[in-house]
Length: 117
Image 1 (cartoon, helix red, strand yellow):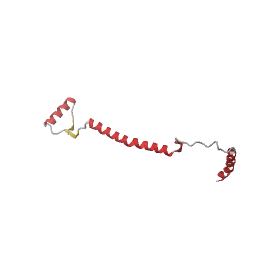
Image 2 (tube, one colour):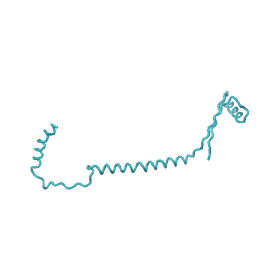
Image 3 (cartoon, rainbow, N blue to C red):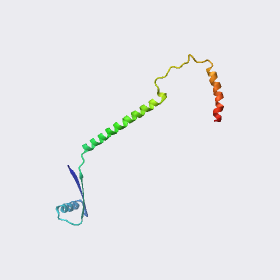
Image 4 (cartoon, one colour):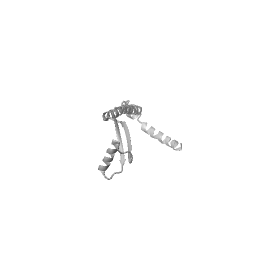
């Protein structure tokens, strides 16, 4: 496994060239004071591994979400009578001619009862 080590060296210098000379002397072991060094080591990440992991997570997420949405859509359409594809034929041939008149009379009678509660 590959590791990445980052070394941060802080020192007082007049310019960039002097700072480079101080770091060179410090790393060679010639200077022991006046320089702060911090070091961090971590495993080196491979971008191909990260890309594959993200792709696998997205496929798994897609495999979970899509069937759930399909099931929800199917249950909504099955439970709703407005989406029924089959409707029995209306029996208008046998309708009573005074049906509309009787319906209006019933509506007039029922309305006051519904208003009173």
